[in-house]
Image (cartoon, rainbow, N blue to C red; front, side, top):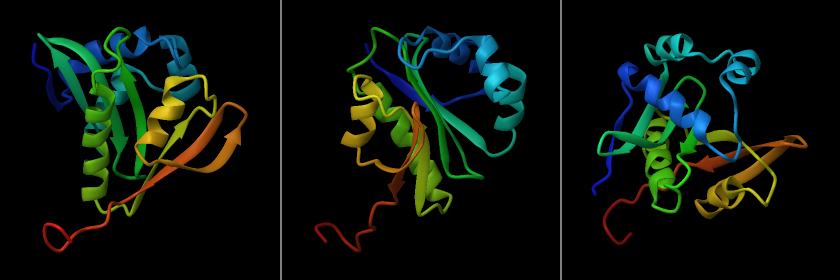
Length: 157
């Protein structure tokens, strides 16, 4: 079965929220997401009318993973992959799409908040992709950054 990866539309938000609430690591409830971050389907739809974009991977119409970023700040806001769909390159694909979009917007460096817990998948995932820790914010959060890849003048440069 082929994965289809595409930009998220407002009509995809119910599937995106359902997927986000299904994750095992960095789990969050709808109430926590609204209380702690002010994120609801309505607020996200409004943000998508501005500087926020996201990419979704689906298979046979079922959302398997997504990532979103904010062009106004250079931040990767979220990367989530449905339990049971891990290890298929979905997180790498959707994160790559967001990173490309943020770099194309002119950011020389982009950033995200991540867990410093080495027992969680995200810890190794970001590091394998070249993200480095900029600073520890709290015991359960660190800021990671990724620099814009060097542009080559020609193939093989």
